[in-house]
Length: 409
Image 1 (cartoon, one colour):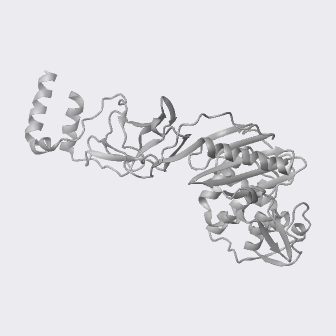
Image 2 (cartoon, helix red, strand yellow):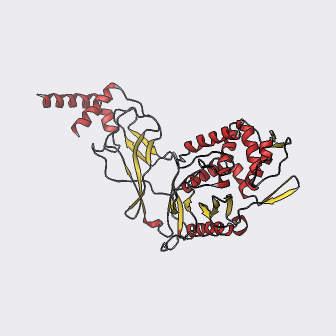
Image 3 (cartoon, one colour):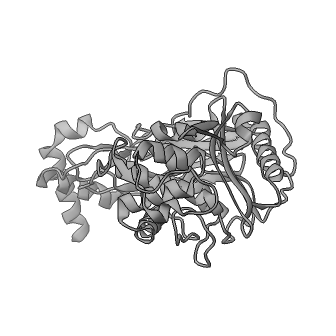
């Protein structure tokens, strides 16, 4: 009896909605289980001048307590050792301090032209200095460049006090932003990187911080490539030796205390590929520079990075049931980059995995499946696909039609 009733309902619905049935030539719905891999539109064309596949040697040995080499765009780690060990970062701390200050500038809470009165505490800071004088007023911009290029502890404390009242309160802001960036292995007790038992970072966190700085504040990042800065008649040179040795290097920051050793986070860009290298706890200035250079050269020589898909570009249409539209376009929230060994671009394969049935309503940005990117048989990436636009429910009669079709398939 139930079977007879179902057949009768199908007949009546087909008679009532014949024009819609005739027009329905979109892709058939997937089964309840996830679909087999469905081809994705091809990634961007391969390079006009193909590179020859190159065997990948062992990464350079680095004489330091921790190190990491990472591609800026894809985030893929190309070499690492003790990358999650909590170590003293010394003045690399100032990169995080500058990130917080740039956030304040972006929010219009301060201006580059604001004048900062130098406190006695800032003036008395030991270590590397900008040589500011107590009671003098200096612009935020001059103090920022002094902090970045000259690594001035006095400039750093003056800025921290100007923004948060005290250096300790400013350090709290640094910790808050670090948490937002996912820097789970870092904690700041001050703004300048002076030794403290509760002040530490990991090489992996430093790379995250560097990527955020370059991505969010390119207009200020240029200051990290300055080789020297003159203030109050005193010329001081940037301690990052790679700025003189390698024209592709445009930052970022050195650090040194007796406890931390010699540290350097550097970044370089060649032919559109950017790398970030972190070296912590080397035994000399020359050692940290040589190790960083070796890591950067290794990454550029043996790897290549490609942008496969743009953000919010349609990769595939998915069938939607009981919706005002029969399909919904799916894409990625962010651009998709991949870093692979040189000369192996032809081995990249991309496919999609989608849920078996998508039922309206569908909100924009809803996750619906994923893109699998493989190099040969090795899965490299699997970012989520999201709906690029919403799909509302259709009429009650069309929902009934779709309900029957879903039942019989």
